[in-house]
Length: 160
Image 1 (tube, rainbow, N blue to C red):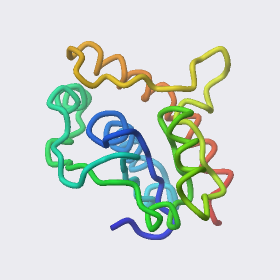
Image 2: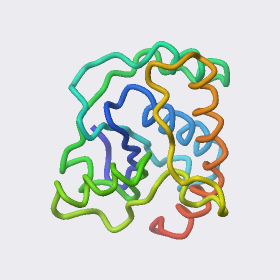
Image 3: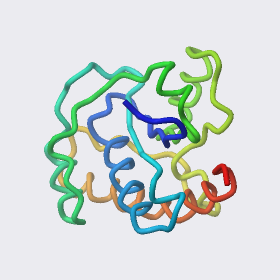
Image 4: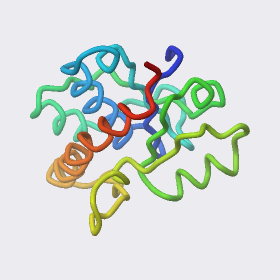
């Protein structure tokens, strides 16, 4: 389970976008100084079943950038995960709305993963599920693009 103050990425089934986002963000944070490099990044899905394997194309797309997700298994979003989150990063506005409707209390910091990019960038991350590898790679690249802005935001909210 995640420790206090973790970063939580959220998508629908927790088999494509949110594990890819978590892997990328964790990889980037590992190269930062303290306290950023000690943050744990976890993922969950709004309607995820427990224990489903990650999409094979997500594994391949991430392996191409040196991140191994082959052992990831899905988990549903829980109040416990939300309660311990320093920051929640959703893939779409619908995910954020579902959190706000279905959970209480809602964490203070719930954003879209790409929300910290300058406009006119689309703040939502399209679901690559069922698409060819190129769609997963495009999804991955859109997530990568957002990571520096997220890290800058984390620096403003992390307890000193």
